[in-house]
Length: 330
Ligand SMILES: N#Cc1c(N)n[nH]c1N1CCCC1
Image (cartoon, rainbow, N blue to C red; front, side, top):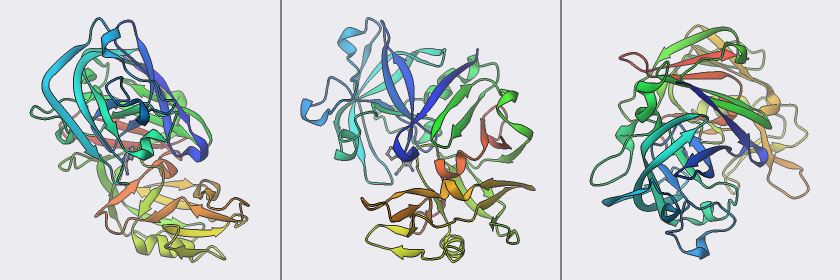
């Protein structure tokens, strides 16, 4: 079995939303596919109307296949301090034609303001490792872990794009979506993430620095959070750039001509075009812009979010004993 689903960007590519069918008859919700977490949770009819502002809500009472998981609860807090919590059902979930009939669907009973204010985002579909799923007392499996054995290959791929729709594919590597070779690198999943070694970096045409650092491939994070020294070196090349703590990171004049950023995977080199690193204006007149590359200080590892991932075709491969990530140009 294999399948393919759209990944459509919200404004500034802050996140990408993917239509997911839940229940019988199918209820379509647009979810943020997130390789940095492992809960599939949805806005639901179980939450107060005051915290729903335009989102679609999963209504288990309208699904003939919904079954309550007695006494199960969940709660999750993300790195940006957004959170959600609730109860659990098992129901049919179909993503891009790949279906599982007893997926844990975590129905929210409460969400933080950041989720309420994003009218287009109906929840999350976590694709990190099931060891960090938050359901208690019995942890649940991610959608990918549930379907892996029925897929033609136990992998999924991300083809995110700059300011346009891309795809998440399950069970197949579509060779039309990349050029050249796929470079694979081993993943350390001991913290539940797709964590790997970035073999080094380069700024624009400057010499590539072979100083490696660990990072997680995280489709649920907007920006690229990199080691402070790397980030400092990058913005040193941007006239007018400064670290503005009131904005929470590096900003620069929106007209700045940004250098590209090169990252290494093994012996391969991938480039993020400078344009991708102009994330969004911080002011109404669009004079000051916020950088797409920011510091990972305080996190403990780098977070390779959408700003970086959209520059490549990425394979999340669990088909062997040791999981691995594949990167290719496109
Ligand atoms: N912060 C954060 C984060 C992450 N590192 N992965 N997914 C995150 N989300 C925040 C809100 C929805 C998903």
